[in-house]
Length: 517
Image 1 (cartoon, helix red, strand yellow):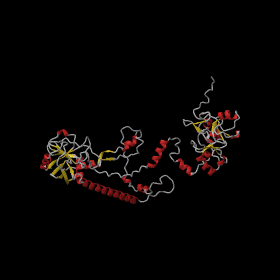
Image 2: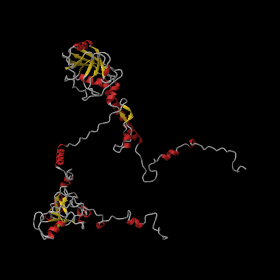
Image 3: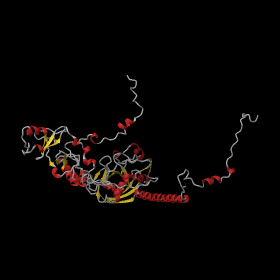
């Protein structure tokens, strides 16, 4: 072992290492640059697979749609930069097998990166070199293997030679070095989604064509203004946007906590403290109903809205069962129709003190859980088995004799009254929801006015403070203290010396120096 085996192991990067191996190393150019090979089935101009191939005398392949506009504009070869005309190009005919891969039509050998591929200039047919050598050159049969057209040895164009791949190194292409581009028409064509769709069956093409005809860009939603937060609609929790933006990169960044806004219906229903009163005028008499708007507001609002619209006018009671109930509220009269005041069905509302106890209980008819729409029923007797299944939202407070008359009417086998029992008109006497809406709207306007006045006062105060402060005077130059006002020294000198705090005398603790000796 030598004594100086580690003499070049230094704790820093030397000048030579930096120059040859690290950041000081220049990028290699020309032949020393890294070899970037283009596949034989790609156009040397667009670097994409070709559809209508053409080739030069040197065997460089282009696509017809790419090379024609390029030659019209630049009139030179995209690869070498030498003058090139359209008449110097030869149209090629490649053949594919059942697997949609390029192959030799004679030997059926699939072309790959190591295949020696040639083309016949007079016909444009593409073969592997083995087939041409065995069947043409060695046999001295200088005729095309497919069309039997005569050709010479000079008409054989080499498209790919595995031993000489310099022409496939697209890092040396002239149009890439000079950044030469095609016309705008070609750029527009490249933006077409189908431009890069090389292989597609008929079904896919038909689907894409249909999509292109029927596709509509999604409309951009207009940004809605933030709802004004008041004491009524302010929640006791935040929106959670800060936490979401902190834990998820998909969320927009938010750094300020914002109070969540309670839904409008929750605020409205919270303020409803009164009962609602409605009259149903039937052909047998009137039915006066009291609605529990303070306990089941959603169900009561649905019924009041339908009555105020005249939804129940001229509808019939389509089902009646003695000692049980009578049902109505279906405009079709079949028991299968009807819709809520908002369109779709809404959820059930159950309260422990609202049960089907006694005669004249008003409750919602449904076809299952959370399927309330417009149909309702009035009980003839207690029906406690319907508790927690149907939402009780009112009771009969007037017109019990009318209900008795309805119960006495006979019915058929399908529980349908034999005589017509019709609701002629509905009258709303008390609507607590409209009253609450008016109060909330007034408070909203008052809060908006206060917010506007506060903003105006803040703007005035800001302008007043800026006017009193006056313009800031800066000292010329860049010396230290140029931003300090000049009169600050005067204010310090004007201080009365008598007002300055005096130094406190330190009392001796007994031991000191020997000056007093």
